[in-house]
Amino acid sequence: MSRTTTPGRQPLARTRIIDATWALAAENGLAAVTMRAVAERLGVTPMALYRHIGDKQGLLDGLVERLLGEIPLPNPELPWPDRLEELAQGMRAVARAHPDLFPLLFERSATTEAARRPRDAAYSALREAGLKEADVERAERMLSTFVLGFACSEAAGRFEHVDADTEFTYATESLRRVFVT
Image 1 (cartoon, rainbow, N blue to C red):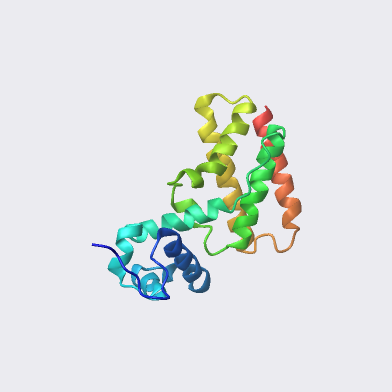
Image 2: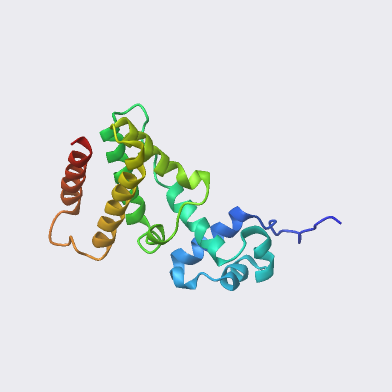
């Protein structure tokens, strides 16, 4: 039995579903993301989504993958401190661009290889910094928690009376010293 699609309608695929989920969340917030709402946006039944995405958790995982995929990877030829700085700046830029979506990065793990690329870039830099293998994962968590926490504070207006860029630079330079000692 072959599958047919309605003329003029794109076939349903994971990428198209995540695109619709992203648009829905951007327009109406994360609370609006339901299987029913995404299906309605795509003009299909909610059951049609399950074959491609699983459940709502799959939708949220797709958003995390998209967010992490927007983080520019640092040039691997740079010295490790500069790579960590570029990665932190890239994470902050994504958080600033998507203030309603980036809190998902606190709640959900990267589930695909593409979503793990920023983490792997940090691991590489931290290994080059001389951290013991047992400490690399912890240090990466500390770095990403710092950046995301800073971005949350920034989104909440905590830095409205100071220059947030100056504060971020001060904080990342302080963090750099932690990894050097």
